[in-house]
Length: 304
Ligand SMILES: Nc1ncnc2c1ncn2[C@@H]1O[C@H](COP(=O)(O)OP(=O)(O)O)[C@@H](O)[C@H]1O
Ligand SMILES: [Mg+2]
Image (tube, rainbow, N blue to C red; front, top):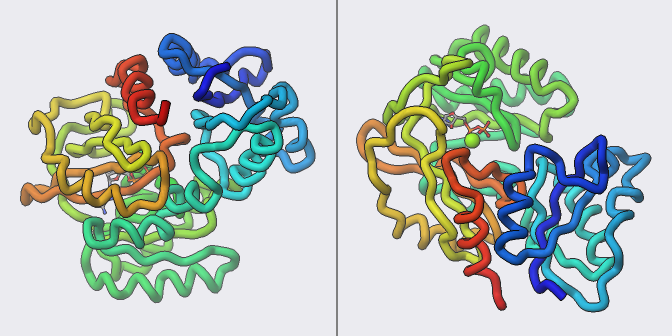
């Protein structure tokens, strides 16, 4: 009996195999001795079919911990997954509450507020909410801001749906909000956040979208211990060999989640800030990172 399991998304066409995008992770996890399970993501994210999502997973004799590595889920979908798995004796590393703590920026703020740009947010259900958000945005005066939903930005549409040079420019703000909502469509997560824009240390510009890339690192923490700190972007030369990690290790102790990512960035003035947290189960492992090294580091942080 394996003591730790990784739950991957199944290939949508061949449900007994892993989703191709996760095949490297699947192999790495196997090599490191993890057991593996598959969930059908299409079923999990379709209310009419959700009860079939874990049908290929057999009930285990004893309770084991499982870590999901797959596509992003809403906290509601995650909760369904959590309960389906528990009924089969597999316990996900984070509860739905813990998942949401790092998945939704408004929920993360309580842990990172002192080290992240000033942020306001508004749940979006109707036109009035947009007006309320525009009203709240006035606190940023003439300063630049960036906008995103509770989880994701449209950063590859930087100039039309993410960066707003002057928060007071109502026309530009409204058109960027409209564009963000149009691009996110039905995938808009809950609401919108507006954040003070901070000048970050330049790396390069994205070769496809032209988005400015900055000196950013993605840190992973498991059971409140640092798993790894990785250059975030696959392009550009990182000038800093390794940022000082002590303050982030300290900050991470307060985050109510057992597995999460923390993205940090260097400002032009040399100070480091947190950009966002993410649940470790749905955060991408940066391309440059050897998957075997990631899973080896993960294994060391799990109880035997
Ligand atoms: N407050 C900010 N000031 C300056 N740049 C930012 C700020 N927030 C995000 N960025 C830049 O925009 C990128 C996308 O923002 P992020 O919040 O990480 O969105 P996503 O969830 O889509 O990754 C970041 O990687 C960073 O380079
Ligand atoms: Mg990000």
